[in-house]
Amino acid sequence: MSDPTGLVLSLITGVIGAAVGVVGLLAVQGWQLKVAKDQARAASRLIYLEITYNVSVLEATARIGTGGVPLLVSSQLWQQHSEKLVNLLREDEVARVAAPYVLLDGYRYYFTQHWLELAAGRARGTDVQLLKQLATSFQDAESTLRPKVWTGPRLTALGMEMEARLPIEIQLNPISRVERFMKAIPVEVLMRIAVGTLVLRLALEVGDRVLKRLRRDD
View 1 (cartoon, rainbow, N blue to C red):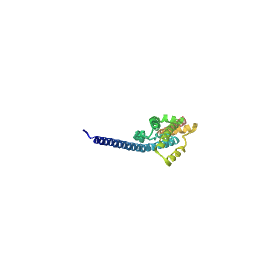
View 2: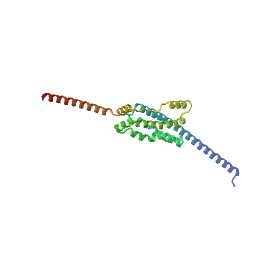
View 3: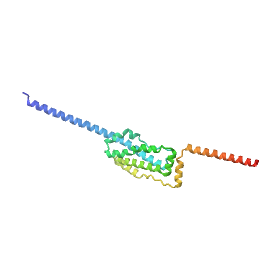
View 4: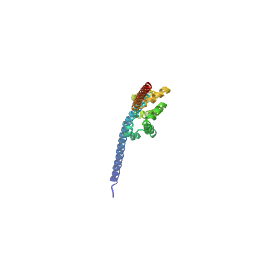
């Protein structure tokens, strides 16, 4: 007949072993979760820096002009680290941060059109409106991500810096529309026009001299 004391000891030992195993498993899972969250925060900070860079580039491009200038917006860090955001953000927050990147290909396509189409868009102010829309989308992504990756004085300073940015605005009149159209014309096209104009002028001068000589001969 089995010893009741031995059975009790075996049962207690098994329970303790199971409890230790569960505690160990929870500790490992907790450590893995902490590591994943730390990695997500580090990746999110890189994406945040890319977002603020994009906002600055879009604002500068809108003010300087897009004639002959590609859309210098970066998406490399987003492509490398975006999957880690799910460990730090809610689903709706991930969507807000992703929104400008999702639309980016469409904006890039617009700014790689033929120069004549871009020039017409500049004269209408379409390029500034698109840049403003994309910058606003990146600013929304920045305000969503900022409190998730920064704290304390840095969070406050970044918030003040973003709020102090001037909105993208441009006043168009007939003269500025013509100027914006001309600035969108590539240099090589302007050179061809200049050379063509010079050749035409020389041809007219030569023709005028020939006509005058023919008239004198008559």
